[in-house]
Length: 394
Ligand SMILES: *Cc1c(COP(=O)(O)O)cnc(C)c1O
Image (cartoon, rainbow, N blue to C red):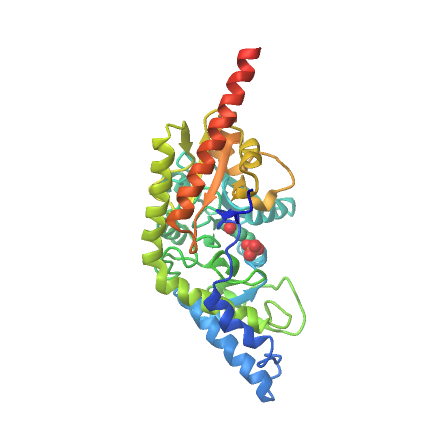
């Protein structure tokens, strides 16, 4: 009966490789193999040239110089390289405090916790229920002991955009380095490391229709020579990330970055209309729900909703294989511990346990939205009626 393909609404967990990206990357597995570091022959040089072109595309996404980009395995590795590298600079400068925020990705929070165990001090800023930091609270946290501020650009669970430009300005005024995890922002919102005073930035290809297993770390040129690598070896990536650079993955990342840059504006308005369509359909069905995080200053490919009296795990179970959604963050699955992001917004346990993330992306169609709304509405109504019947039986 139900053999329809499931509808994918989990674009913050990962995105499919765009077919146009796949076409560009495939030849680098077959006809154009070659070790990009073996530049004494044509095989190697062709790979090296392809990587150089890709590096320029990725740099252009954030207004950086290609020489400031280090290819990594993803944003997790980039966050590790950048925060641990910055920590050594902080120690040398006598500025041992890191300022970060309660809604960061685990790949920042856990690195900060490790640095804390190693003797650094860490200030974790709370957020208001909008999920958006206000600049005054950041300014209050800054002092002469703060060496690094790490605040993400777009949140992976609630999609809200932090005031990156303002934070960069404050960091510059107070002499702190500024890192931003831009895994969910790259290719989605305009980023410019010069205008935004960003010193260190992390990107991931698989959040912008490139493949899994490749990302990049931006390191402002003036800091680079002081950085220590996580991985020692053959001196690739300017000695900061040893290991053979994967040509096909880099080519794909470059192609994905170029497409994302070209289509950024049109995609934003298209996603916004899809999101508003879903909100209207759910509202018309008179379901009780709240939107977690501010709706306006948010990447429109994200919604995070808590339905009244509906537990997220039960809802996911009810929609089953028909809708691919997420409760909390996919990166902490296996444990059903409640999302640390929603917990930072509210104390309301029902709302925390009810939070469902819905992500839209490049392949999402209005017909999929209509179908998804139909499935969600039926599931929520069913769970509510079950609950009410159970309560009447008490
Ligand atoms: C996905 C994600 C990461 C991890 O990226 P990987 O490339 O999968 O390591 C880090 N931070 C944020 C905000 C993310 O969304």
